[in-house]
Image (cartoon, rainbow, N blue to C red; front, side, top):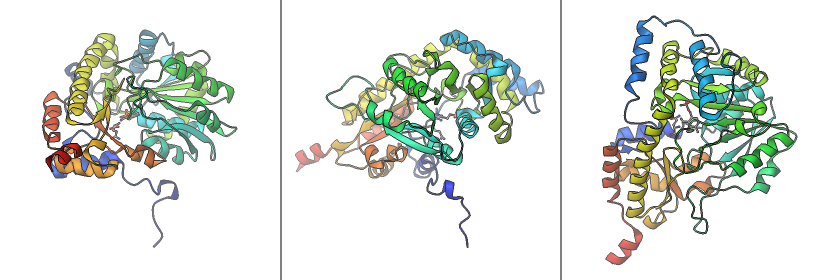
Length: 400
Ligand code: PMP
Ligand code: GLN
């Protein structure tokens, strides 16, 4: 029989998030793998959703978003970053950031166009590029070395990135703060990338879903850089900021010509996003800076707790500058391969993500694993208690 799966999706397998959560559930491991909170989103947002359902918002929303939400998002960008977007003409509500990225790539890319991205990348990037007929061109983020111990100092080779840009480059797909490394791109790095976009007439899709999870440094939206607003699609969602990953309410903010491309695809992908959740999202978006401050303080505590404990147990770990992920090297336990070590951790009772799946050069991501700390303190402490059982090779040596 002929294979049923299209060639463009062959080789992607099942996402690592699905795989690791299934394994965690099956084996009773504590899930620090898939990035979702094990606590609920804020009461006031949940109540707003219940009220919206009660009020009868049960039919299709406007294709580009419920007007009140588009207006609230317009106010958010003005308030948080002094960025002016017309809610109706320049903001499109989507079913999560994932759909926004997918729709934008579908709307902008022709077959054979090239999309520049950094590895490790969020896994939907490469698949979404392929589904749009585009070809991913990948630069590598390098881990902080002992010679460069400053926090979150993942770096890239500027010449290597420059070499990826050419006549077929259509899009730079950027993610800051960055999953899985926790890197928050610095202004000079963004300026450098913006320069390449302008020189090659390339659109930047800027995935900023962790925009409000920054502990060190500052989040700089690409669209705030000179000459970039007109060529940037700024994407974010409710999921991370409001601990509501299951709502899948996201959006894309972009000038009218880019918005036209996004909506041209979005109208045939989902058409519109769940109406009552959009109404409730207005309450979330309006809560603003006071809410973000509390969120960052809570996650800073969890970051420091997990990173401190991992270091004590013997992991090679630096505190991430942003996101709710911590990457940790495991050489001291005698392992050299992230997949093998992840399997071992499942036996120990903790599920993590092996990052080599986020690379086109998997060997570059073999030496560390990703822990998610978007979990209750009790969950993190229980995971740490299980990790105490790990044997350091040095200790084993001493025991002999
Ligand atoms: N981009 C990145 C970098 C992510 O980590 C995630 C996580 N889920 C997404 C996009 C998807 O966001 P959403 O759940 O809003 O689709
Ligand atoms: N973004 C989440 C993570 O990196 C998971 C998203 C998903 O499960 N598709 O863990």
